[in-house]
Amino acid sequence: MVENSKLKLLSDKNSLLLLVDYQPAMFRGVGSGDRTIIKNAAVGATKTAKILNIPVVLSSINPKLNGDVIKEITDLFPKQEVFARKMPSFDAFEDKSTADAVKKTGRKKIVISGLWTSMCFAFTALHALREGYDVYGLVEAAGDSTYDAHKYGIKRMLQAGVIPVTLVQLTSEWMHDWGNPKAGELMKEVYSKFDAMLGM
Image (cartoon, rainbow, N blue to C red; front, side, top):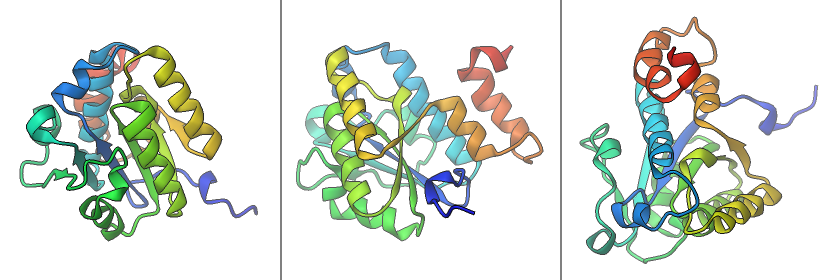
């Protein structure tokens, strides 16, 4: 059997979610796609992670200027620190608190998304690859100032080895099957709210 860690499915035991810069000013600068769809994908992934007890790490840049991470995300983890990067780098992994929080989980599969695609999302994802993680990019939750900036930010990550995922795919992979004891809660809180077909 071929030993390739990327062939192993994501699970609630082997992965974590890192969300970067879901702040009001960053959303206002998005011109590459529907901001509601982008926000819903980020919130949906966070809800899935909470329901399945998957670690979530939150990073922000210059909250005094850009605002705090949106409440739809932080309200799910009211006691959890959002790591405001001490060095205002585009790369969240350059922030020691963020990198240490990821390492502390002991998990080697990391699902990342962020605003904006070509900068904070891409640079963080590329850094995580250099650190030896299997990196999965939640592309539906990402956006950039222009369509091309988003498109080529995604292309750059894919060429480097980031694996693209979408919200429903990610939720289903983490859940694994409908026999999961949390399937009913996921249907109520994620599938029915964020997926038109399954929500029917």
